[in-house]
Image (cartoon, rainbow, N blue to C red; front, side):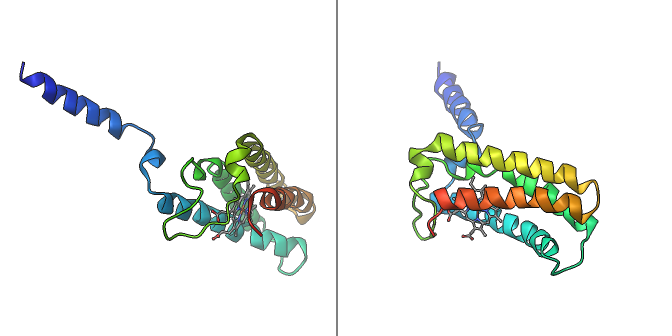
Length: 153
Ligand code: HEC
């Protein structure tokens, strides 16, 4: 049967196409993704830090929007560190080797961050600074906790 190898070939490539996308990405691209994700987190968290310190006026809409962004991006942190992305070809990374040697703890940190971000989203519904402040402080504590353990200074 001449068709068989053809079918096997087509079927095989269909299987490949359905494999997780990040498994086929170059380490540099994955590193760009995770650094970009972190830039978004920094961008989303910054105004809330400024509001907490009274540097800019409280803005309930901005808080709700940015809290939602932190919660969403938090769900993607762990997948930015697949095996083989410890180093890039040209992309620099500050990810510490502990991410891969103590993956369970890293994932736990990511989950704790998500939980804190979900609480911030909840708190943002109150629409006032008093509710935002402690919830934001809890999120910020998770950012620095993870950075202390898993990011090169
Ligand atoms: C579960 C761990 C974890 C959490 C939670 C986390 N980060 Fe990070 N962050 C990292 C790691 C690891 C890197 C280094 C990534 C790299 O260089 O490949 C990083 C890098 C960064 C960077 C530098 C990105 C760049 O372009 O090099 C910024 C900014 C940042 N994080 C902000 C934040 C903020 C703000 C929060 C909280 C709102 C946060 N991170 C929460 C682990 C975390």
